[in-house]
Image (cartoon, one colour):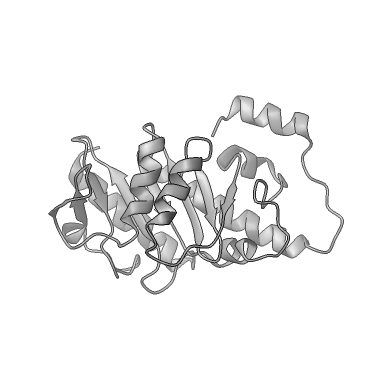
Amino acid sequence: MNEAAHREQICLLAKSLFDRGFTVGSSGNISVRTDDGNWLMTPTNSCLGRLDPARLSMVDAEGKLLSGDEPTKESFLHMSMYAQRPQAGAVVHLHSTHSVAVSMLGNIDTETPIPPITAYYVMKIGRLKLLPYYAPGDVSLANAVREVADKHHAILLANHGPIVAGKTLEAAVYASEELEETAKLFLLLRGNKITVLDTAQVAELQAKWPS
């Protein structure tokens, strides 16, 4: 996919996320790895529902701005994911309501904050990791993400939101959507006895659809 197509796709999928309430205001950010080894990112303080393809930020491997508006102030989160996942072609970070709600629950298992309640959650997300709270813009979060990103392409930041990497932007967006919808299901079911997929069922899915 050429650069122009990447720009159009970012804006199209970002608007779709915004229009359906997966992000609000100027929250959330998206990045895509380009064929020349640089990254296109959504600009800081931009609304995902009203992006201009020509004003997207282009940054190099060191995070230096090459063209466009200033990149998202959370660009360090994206670069930490890419550093540990060379196969990733895109990263999506949202402040989606139900995922954030799950991240705020007390006594939650940080290794399995959402149990395997659906097959598609296992297929799209695999193993979700919950990280502790860091203040917005705290670069210490970059190290925390880097420490787990090689084993987790989806990470939940406490009191903040999910960050999800994918081989393509579509894959990252679809996984982010699956995570949010599963978080919603999980919250709806809390307080009830539920049936989750067992170890063998999870293993079978992960063998066919490794995340």
